Amino acid sequence: MNKTSGYKFTIIVPIYNEEDNMEALEARLSSYLKEASVPACVLFVNDGSKDRSLERIVEVCSRNPHFFYCSLAENAGLSAAIKAGIDQTWSDYTGYIDADLQTAPEDFNLLLPYAADYELVMGIRANRKDSFFKNLQSKIANGFRRMMTNDGVTDTGCPLKIMHTTYAKRVPFFTGMHRFLPALIQLQHGRVKEVPVRHFPRVAGVSKYHLWNRLVSPFMDCFAYRWMKKRYINYSIADENITR
Image (cartoon, rainbow, N blue to C red):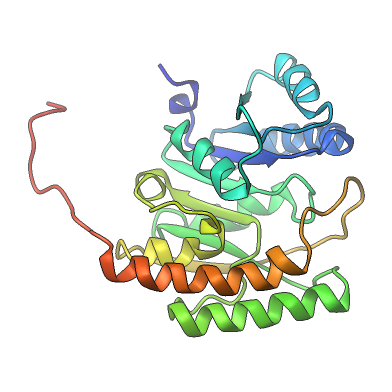
């Protein structure tokens, strides 16, 4: 039996070369699990880290009974790490947070009250603590994405999200998919809710993002999404006897 099935909510944390952040992640996530509004666990996904991240992950999971991990054979990127986490999750809800802790695990409790009524609940980063140039890049990329997808979402880059796991598992995955989760949930006629959350400066580790993967690559991915949207197959099961 998959261990996450014993929980209501699984928090996926993709990890790539974040050994300097593992101590803070352990402290903040273990503290949050004690006050989570539903039974919750943590699933680290090691994305082929080149540093000691995997070693630290194994240590953290060994002393925290509600922490689990899986490790990719090689670095495959953020979208692949999120997909791997979703594939390994069998709780009702699947959450996602970045390892840089620029958003707060405690703010999942701001999102969870809406999870029953919305297939995706996501944060909007209030008072962002990023540089002017980084904020400008995000503003341009978000505006172009909204124009191309009509998803109506303010801040798709906010790494604090909760999805219904059944919907998450049906999301068509591709490189850059994580930027289009609201639009991809909406393709399944899912409802999306945005909630303001806190934002903090990075205190350890190094950002994996630069001009190409924050601005240029998302522009290209928008055209891939438009192509895929026209060919997306959506269905629902009316009756079956497989599980009865």
